[in-house]
Structures are given as structure tokens and as C-alpha cells.
Length: 339
Ligand code: SER
Image (cartoon, rainbow, N blue to C red; front, side, top):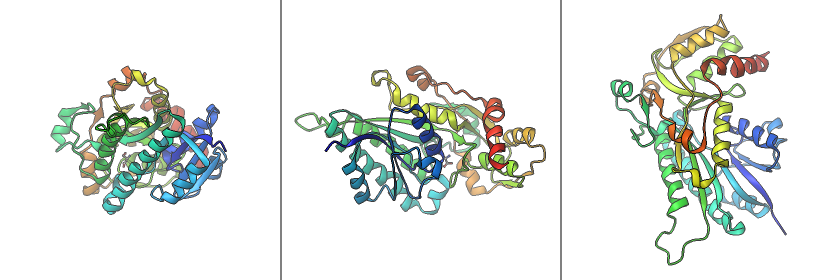
């Protein structure tokens, strides 16, 4: 019996999953199997060879998957985001770290069947950064991958550690063994800024104020923003995030000097974001009612990130700046969605 070769997407029903599955299926050369805690939206499920509903921590389920399919590439998107993780840090650690460790072992095991490295694409986040105060944040400006990595959230700690784990699995696994292990994981990670999708509203993140503000305006609902007007972090439109993952996956290994790359598109304050929303939805009702604890998390994230390594090594360049993201992607799609 020959198992079918597939790409595995975990957290498939989430924000990135929606855009990613659509793109991979449009390209048409790979079969997708999806894993999520909840059933996939119907349209998304139709694009997948098979959908498995359950937890990434359920080893019986993951074994059932590999008994049926040979996995050549993993997009491991499942995670508890930064706000939600603070309400259940131990659970977040299990999902975000133990779950990722389990999938890396699965990737390693899968590579022994084909003799080829299994690609492991991992979304990391600006949450791995931790700036101690606003003055330092302003002074730091665009941060490089190795600067200010002192996360203040469980989610940030989990992402930073899993980046290291990925580097370990792809370069140093069982480094003291007499013979080099032939099984290999080809780990590649992107540190994303806040992502804004026209299709889905995020749940449980701390950069959610921006997408929430926009979706509320489109629905004609008033919105109380949980951070101050002057709060600045970097953002990106979802199609660029998906494109980043696919481009990094397609890059020749020898071009990649690092296993983890920042990418970003535009930085702006919550007040500037509100002004953009009002440009397109003039009757939007947005007020600022900072939640001091969530504010502290966003204040620890950088104003901007330096993504020159991604641009140099694998040619990353976002299509959308803030104006075109609103005018050409977000607003038309969101209007259609709530029409
Ligand atoms: N957008 C995510 C969050 O807010 C960060 O990766 O948790």
C-alpha cells in the first residue's frame, strides 16, 4: 500500500488557515489534509483531501493520520494566542510547546519514509519581543530578529522556544550520535506582525484591536478599542502573510541563512488605524477605553520590525501598504462579507 503524499495544515480553521488553504488549493499541485479542534468551514473543507477534527495533542489521532498519509510538509498553525494564553498559561504551554514538539517528532518520523526532509513551516510572532518600557520601544524602532527577545507573555515564550526547538531539530538533532541521523526536519519560521484578514476575525490575540475595529465598523457596530490611541505596532494584510509562508517554503534551502525571519508591511498607531477605518466607514463609532493589562502586552511589542534578512534571502516583499490594504483588499472584501 502506498500512502498518498500530502501537506498537513494544523489550526486549519483559523485566520491564517483560511487564506493558506485557499492559496495552496488554487495552486493545485498539492493535496491538503487539515486538522483543527473544530470542523472546517464548508468551503474550506471542500478544498482538502480530508479533514480531521481533534487536538494536535491526541497521539491516537495523529497516528491515524500518518497511517493513511505520507506527510511531506507541515504548516503548523494551531496555537493559543497571546491574550487567551494568559488566562490558561499551563494549557497554552501544552498546546503551543508540547503540541509543536509532537509535530516535529512526527515530521522527523515521516522523513524516514521518503528519505527527504519534511518541511515544517511555523508562524512565530512579534510577541517574542519584550521591550521594557515605552521610551525604549520608541528608541528601538525597527528591531532585528536577535534584539529584545525577552517576551512577557506565555504565548511569546512558547513561540520563542519553539523557534529554538525547530532550529535544533533541523540542525543539531542527536548531534552526539555515532552516525548522523538520516531523518531530517527542514524548519522555517516567520515572525509575523499583527495580521488583518477580511475573511475572519481573530480570537484571543492582543493585536486584535485593529481587525476588530475594522470589522465592527463594517457591521455598523460601535467599538471600544482596548489600547490607547498612541499605541503602535506593525501589521500586515493576510494575503501577504500567506504569500510569505508559501515563498519561504519554496525558497531553496541553500539561500536561507536563518531559520527564523521577521516580515512586516506597515506600522501605525491605533489612532491612525481608526482614522483609516473612518475614511472608508465615515459613520464608524470608535472610542478608546484602554485595558491596562492588555495595553501592557502591546506596549512590550516593537513599533516595527526589520525584515531585511527575509528580503535578502528569499525575496520577501509585501504587496499591500496601509492604503492599498484598505482600499484594494480589506474594505471591498469586508463590504461583500457583511452586505
Ligand atoms: N496576533 C497575535 C496575538 O495577538 C500575535 O501573534 O496574539
